[in-house]
Image (cartoon, rainbow, N blue to C red; front, side, top):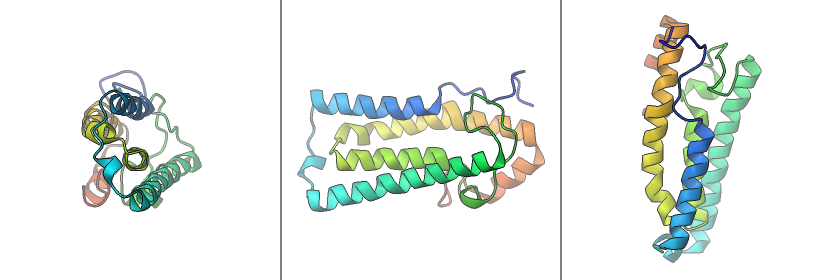
Length: 162
């Protein structure tokens, strides 16, 4: 069991706040100090490509959420995990909600030509990785033991072998 006596991951920040803050900060920085690199890209490909990436990210996150709800476990890392999701989308990525959120953020940057958002995605991913995902993994390993350790050896953290 994790060191905390509470039955939930000890995440540093609620994950949707990372996403919302990154988008807001990227938008404000773009307004204050526009870079303009994405704006020079041809809209005929940038907007449809960005829209497709947003839709893929939303679909990935929604599918992961639906799987957790179907299992009867909590989606929020502020509540206990009652079941380990290993099938469906969780069979090829251990973090479909977070991977989907990052994809959607990348698509938003393309659609709205937010250069600063592209710059901020990397620090956002690092905060998510160390402040949320690694802590969730420690919690799940403590709670589900060998079952989770086996799952970790089979399914990549972010999908696509990563």
